[in-house]
Image (cartoon, rainbow, N blue to C red; front, side, top):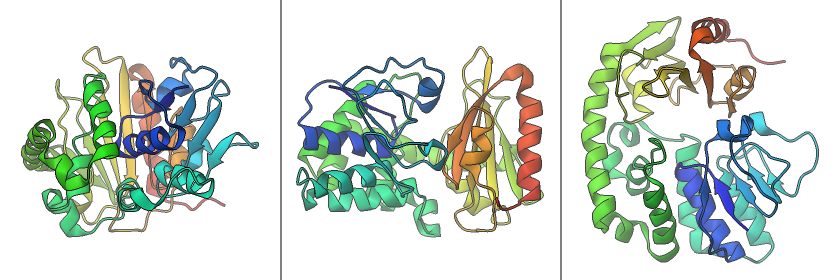
Length: 299
């Protein structure tokens, strides 16, 4: 039996809860959503899939993304909820497999994954332990596998303040603080505001700038949604697109998960992403932008 989840803060916490509830000792299989959608991920019978699109090869599945809503009943649990971790927590607490030990962790996971943040939390994440820790979780070619596994182990044994004192975690937090300061400059120089949509194009960078994903909403308060465009790797074969509704200027009516599902991606109503072939990316991006500019509610 394996836990299969994605390398973000919600995925980390999903793994913590599943390890505790099911007493799983095997290594976690970390994958990205498009690897499920393109069947690149090797999903096996007995696998518990969490925070990812459904695969018929798994035994249990837990998720909360609107674009992944199942058409029929599956084993596990699906809810439109702030986090997949919250879905898992509620499921196993009802079964008596988890107690209230992780209440604080799940509350913060809900807040971070649903982007229920205020201006101070966005501009100064270093003041908020769970937020700044979540920013250390990145996927750069799966180079951080050992770190993701380490965080799962740490959360099973220690509180957030003890975790932040770990030398590796502290080093990564310090680096994130530096990156966030540089990221503000990159956003300002590479973002255009068109029809209240902020469009950040990082395709000119060999190394894509990284930093606070919520910062754009503070820097461009007129925007109702943000679009970030970049290449997925140095070979430039694919373009990655990430879109989010502003967490402050809440006038975007487009269901982003459903919109991006039309282009092979998915996500929540308020945030999502997709991978596009470079040759056809501009045409797809133009169609997506036109939908955002029109800003119509789904009927």
